[in-house]
Image 1 (cartoon, rainbow, N blue to C red):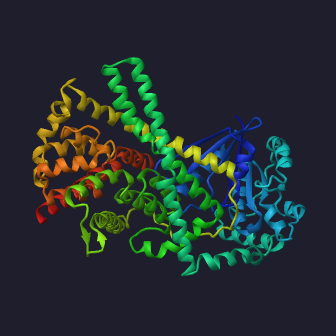
Image 2: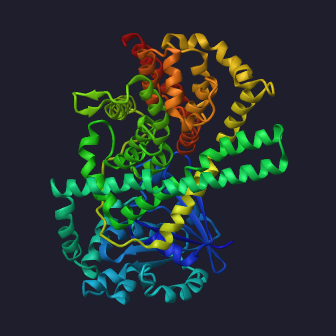
Image 3: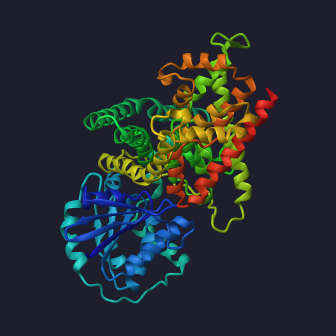
Length: 605
């Protein structure tokens, strides 16, 4: 199929134009370990490819290197008929540097080029205009002024596009060679001075808002309010959707198993498929809500300001200002938080952020914390005679997780500083204009985030769920204590003795790899109690009567703060980094670290 290629710098409205051209006929291709994402769709008889926003053909990071490499291959391909360079009409100079480089690349490969002057509505809002005919003559290629948001000029461009794509491009002598970066910058500056609008006109309204949002006091208050809104959206407002998903999965499970009847097939579907694989589907609404809120913040222009506010303190620990939102999101769930780390421009800081997100205390740890705190601390106990001691313990666990994340990120920053594979990038931030989001592409991004999560994580989770179910089910009818998993628990009991724990806790800890909250139900089964998740107080009383020591309990709590006991998180790390050894190495590393901390706590207390 013949191809049309869309290119442009970030925040030029290119993806919105792509959406207007292709509608819902889109596919997304991801490259593991980087944030590069190629979108393809169909317009007329052409395949349209939306390349990632790039500032230059001279790449600075692995992400840009892959994007530029794919662009070079696409322009060289005989199926490519047209290259569309999207320009930001309100910030012409910044867009032109990359666009002129692409034009030179296209001409070198005898490919037709057309320039799209997007966001022309913003120029008109300032009461200004741009001489399109003169700009067309200057650039030596067709120029179309339009607004992908208001649809002004889009119909005319869509009507002309097939003809432009079929039009042969005559070989042209290159005025500037591709390697002459300085000359492209100088020409872009000269064209902008002649035809573009003055930057102070664009910045006037933006600076008025930034005076408030970037103020040391008022900006800090606004930042905390917005982050609280983000946290609430992930932690609280997504809950009804998650409950609905869980209820739907439960209804489907009951319906199918009811039709099949009791037996091994029914048990497999109920426990391994719906209990294991189905459990991670509950997180899909949370991921979609997070994507929606972050998308609104990004499209509106605030996300760049938040990164600027957070960069200085986080840079002390080897992190980026953009690491804050993934860290905050990690307190709800590590899976969407790892996906949110895609916004970090530096490959090294992005990797450090992703690898330390699991140390944030996610919502799945809450049942474990609630159970063990109820065992160790009386309900009416107070701290300093004022604060509830159980609440203080919760705070301490959350604070310990954050502290461990900062310590580990600092160490990772030191040890990866000389890595040739993980190139660092300077914190270069463009503060885009404040705009209202365009909802159609934003909702498409939300849907894609859920689908991508299922596609990436489901295979790994299925395999591990199947293994754990098999170990816990056979010999059939023997019960969990006498199953293969129970025998493994007895065999590895010496490993847990230094923690002051017996084989029952070991089995519950192994099973909690499916999801941390499984620990409560599994331990309830070990103590002969069904429905432990709904009766944590009753299980806590049984554990107290069984004689769990203070040291063992504190050690177990700290173990769950640090250990990566979540198969979905491991699967997501593997998908995002593209390397199994990183994901499983982190699982082993945090497991060993958590074990040592638990042993020390068991002997101190």
